[in-house]
Image (cartoon, rainbow, N blue to C red):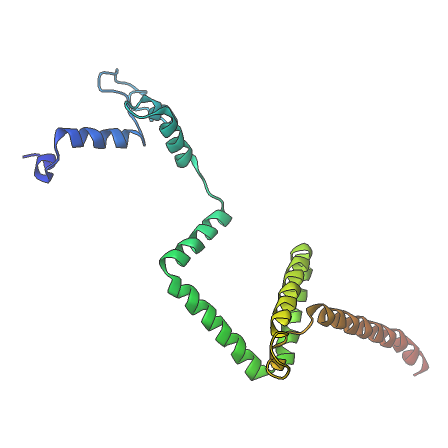
Length: 199
């Protein structure tokens, strides 16, 4: 007894399976002459129009679908969408865990230190990718303005500790501090040869 009979597959099912498999790689028919071209692999675009009973539009769509090569960005967004749809608890857990980590950092190190570290990271990123860094700083600034406008609806004193600092003023203060330090160090460096000459 053959394997197909054991599995309960009839001749129609076997022919359907052969047709589906033939869409992937079709070899020449058995009556073709033997030789180096006898087992030539035919591309799906060549094989699909040869199917009987399938409209041309459907075969073209399947050919385009098989030819699709998503970029890395599309693959990442597809994976994110699948995680959101299939495992929404992971998304909620990640957000809650991130909020607890941020709260723990603020409690452990203080808000000033956390914001100065964030500004340092933002400056490093802006130095590495200037255009994206400027866009990220603008987005963070917009979010801070929206958050502050939301907090303005509450009575004074209730939400004073929740206001976000003005990121642009922090960046400007850091730039001014760096410029002052650079001029002081340059002045000290310029004065060093004068002291060595007097000694």
